[in-house]
Length: 237
Image 1: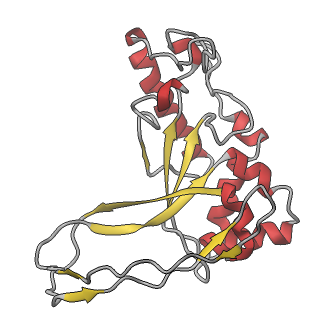
Image 2: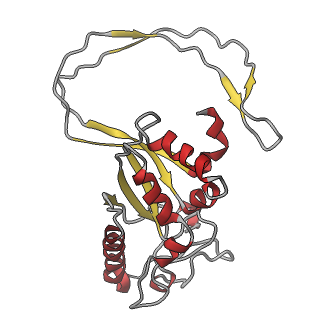
Image 3: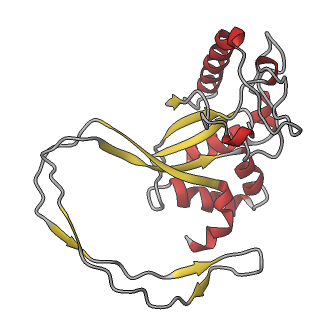
């Protein structure tokens, strides 16, 4: 998959989720030794997956880990990556054949076969521009995702032969009219604004409308979070 390294933008940070426990089974103690490591560098200076020599690391003591599967915890559901509007823009610059090759590599059973993925509700910092589904009270539409390619990318990922993944969604911000600064971001004060308490119900309805709209497009949303970064990403959103 090294040939897709320059398209890491297309499927951004991986994550994993869990739920019910798997069947119990005891596994004996296993001694783990430090693995051999190879380092490769890709940079704006022109490096492209260049092998980097590193000095031999000092020897470290062996680590002993005990796995007791009789203690029920959580079932590992899978690993995935984000489907973003910037991803769609990047992938649409490829030929249809290369674009399909990338999608197959991530979502197909002969590739990574991601079991989870995440997308953004309206724009995010992985979008080419800022937009919302509700520019004013009483208005809602996901048409922008149809125009900018995000919805098509999600559908194409689902259409990969053998693909099977759940889709999570997170908003980076509430619609500007719902916030105290009435903007996506206030560069002068370096803050994204705060959702007004008077608009809590409107924001909840906004999320419900999104889930319903995507479901109607054949792209059901498995789960959502109320916001991407609760601490506000240093006020950026």
